[in-house]
Length: 403
Ligand SMILES: Cc1cc2nc3c(=O)[nH]c(=O)nc-3n(C[C@H](O)[C@H](O)[C@H](O)COP(=O)(O)OP(=O)(O)OC[C@H]3O[C@@H](n4cnc5c(N)ncnc54)[C@H](O)[C@@H]3O)c2cc1C
Image 1 (cartoon, helix red, strand yellow):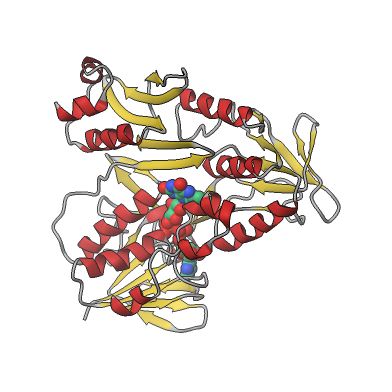
Image 2 (cartoon, rainbow, N blue to C red):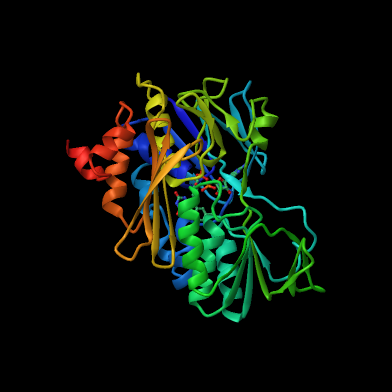
């Protein structure tokens, strides 16, 4: 009988188990994760959960799923090593679990910037439910929060904290918000929103250290300014968990390197989700998104079942909720050379079309779910969408889709 062992019980790992069973896989499935409890969704940690603290809505599947789907779920279990020659995953307890197919879905962990003070009380990070629970409790007693990092997670938290009445400062090293992920017009739209909500956003500002004796009292910037704080969130990005793969002799470069079917050089071993570096349209790519985790999982489930399928090529898409603004992104804007921005009735930018040459490569929207869905459908088509076609349709993506 075929045995699949999945390392990491997050969004990607759980999705492989579910996809295998949905596709009729009859072999044994073991899902091993080092966190306690049921596998859960991370996106609400910085959104709904940070507001309401309701952990019951986070589970990806109810407890009954594991018995019904015959998935051996092993929470609180660390995979300490992989022995490809023996086809065995070795747990920290010493237990050895044999596999015919191994899926590495080990996710990522937060970067720790090289600044003093990270271990002071009152300094937080946000990746898992335990972090979110601590941060939420700290928020209830805090008056002044400084968020280091103006990316999705830092800004989502900043919006919740400002809404809860804290004085919030965001410190961002780049000259615009979410610079890695969105175009300048979108960064500007969100800068306006956060400033209008009372958040003090400092751009081109480098946190040099966290001050305080025992407890965080402030964040010192490279220009000498100290921002007082009784709560500090460090949200400066993540790094993929690649150590297991590397120790097993698999290639690692900003993630576990896999081919167009998400396979490592060892055909029995796959890597998916946040930990995987995979070719997308020929470009080495690592994504941190629910979309990538679940689409990777579906592809790998079919590969394990021997399906003859085209190379992995699902369109990336993302979202971020910041206060009343829902940002949705279809496609990757990296490498754009021109953009066109559309505005709503108030004159605020609500859509940015990103072009590379004559080709539409990404669409960013704010509170425009219909436009986002149309963009996803258009950009998923095999044929490129030309700028001329978008302009001929008066920038109306739904018209273009229908035409
Ligand atoms: C606060 C927050 C908000 C987010 N918001 C969004 C959003 O709005 N939209 C979006 O698309 N994405 C969002 N993301 C990103 C999204 O949650 C991730 O891309 C997704 O969880 C990746 O799934 P994964 O399974 O690859 O990794 P993870 O969910 O990180 O799961 C990996 C699991 O493997 C475990 N593990 C690692 N090594 C071992 C080992 N050796 N043995 C056993 N277990 C191991 C880890 O502890 C972890 O539980 C957010 C992330 C965070 C943290």
